[in-house]
Length: 111
Length: 115
Image (cartoon, rainbow over all chains, first blue to last red; front, top):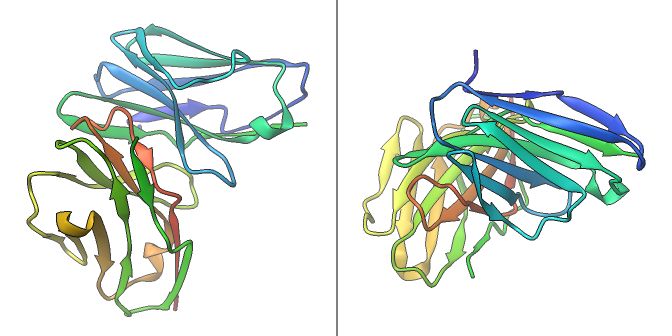
């Protein structure tokens, strides 16, 4: 079992759909993060949660809505996305004294 | 603002060659941390190394070595005797936090090692 598990691995959705990405960490760490990896831009931090509280929102549009019910689970709710939101969405777990451990990502395609 | 530049977008080498991946960073912080991650085709980012700004000693781990030069704001990564399994995208990243909570990534270098 890997440290950080993301589901689904691939997702195709229409612009009017609502979907959610799920991340689960098995590391016992207190922090979780969402990163976005687009084809033409460097990896970008989207959100940071520490002890279930959002501590960072990197100017992410409201069509992306994160949820962190506990330190082991992180969701990214998606609605009315645009084609340019197509990307690899990476979740990571981490905390003080340790580096971030990443999941395999969800490849999202918005059609 | 922090910035990381990986000028080489793609490198192709033949197996057993040595290869160096360049990384140049910008930050106003006096304390910061530098990272290298490997992204194989499967997608996840695999942590390779973390180095803090006060430790300029070079590090070697098997075929991997890192050269941190504060004077030139560079943190280069060398793979000695490259292997096909080294083929991946490599990212250099910067954080003002040891845990790397909020990483600023470079654009990545795609390394292709041919047999």
